[in-house]
Amino acid sequence: MTLRFSKKLIVFSLCLNLLVTIPALVLFFMSSSIQYTLYQNVLAPRFGSARIAFIGDSITRYGDIWGPKIGEYNFNVWNFGHVGYTTRQMHSYLSEVLKQKPDIAFVMAGINDPDKSITGAYQSFKNYRFILDSLINTGTEPVIQLTLYRKREKHPDFIDELNRLLVLYARQNNLTVIDLNPFLSREKSLLEKYSLDGIHLTAAAYEVWSKEIKQVLNQKEILEKQ
Image (cartoon, rainbow, N blue to C red; front, top):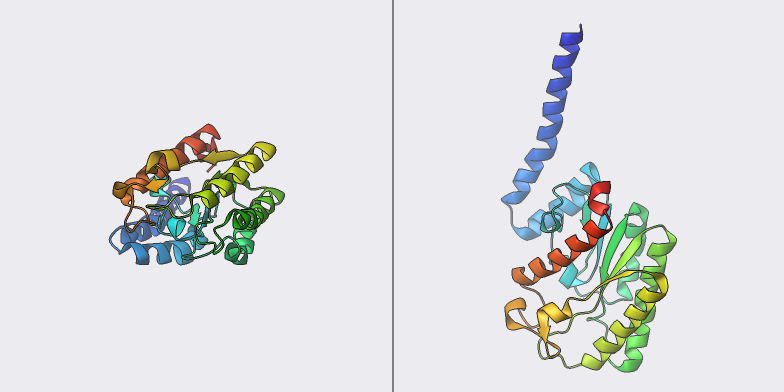
C-alpha cells in the first residue's frame, strides 16, 4: 500500500513539474510581446503571486518578463508597466498592484508627464508620492528608481528637481533609491549604446538596471523569501 502510494506521489509530482515547466519552455520560443502577455495575464496569475512588482511606464514595460533578468525563474515577478503612462495615469492600475500585496515594488516614472517645468516637477512628485504612500500603507516596500535622462535631454531641470524630491522622500521614509543615470548617461544625456531611440533602453541598459535590482534584492534578502 505504501509503495503504491509512493508511486502515485511521484507521478503527481512529475505531472506538476511538467505543468509548470512546459509553459515556461513555450514562453522561451515566442516573441517578447507574446511572452509578456501570456506570462502576465495567464501564467503568473495561475502559478504565482506578485511577490516582486515593477511599476512604471514604457521603460519598465519593455523590460517585459523581469524574472529571468533578476535571477528569478518562477511566476512571482510581475510587470505592471504601461506604455505612455504619466505619474497620474499610473494611479489607475495601482489598485491592481495593491491587491497582490507584493513584498517589494520597484517604481520608476515621470518622463511622460506633460509639464516639465520646475513647478511641474512638484506636481509629478505629488503623483509619485501617492503611489509610494499607498504601497507603504498596504505593507509593500517601495524602491524608488530615479527618473532617467533622455538623449540630449531638453528638460534636465525638471528631472533633477523631481529626483531631488524623491531622494528627500526616501531619506524621510528610510527607502532604497536606485539611480541609473550615472551608469546610463553622461552630462545629462542618455548614452547612445543604452538608447534605442533617445528614450527607450537597449538590452545592455536593462542588464545594468537588472544588476542594480539584484543587489537590492540580495541586500534585503527578498530572494530568499520567495
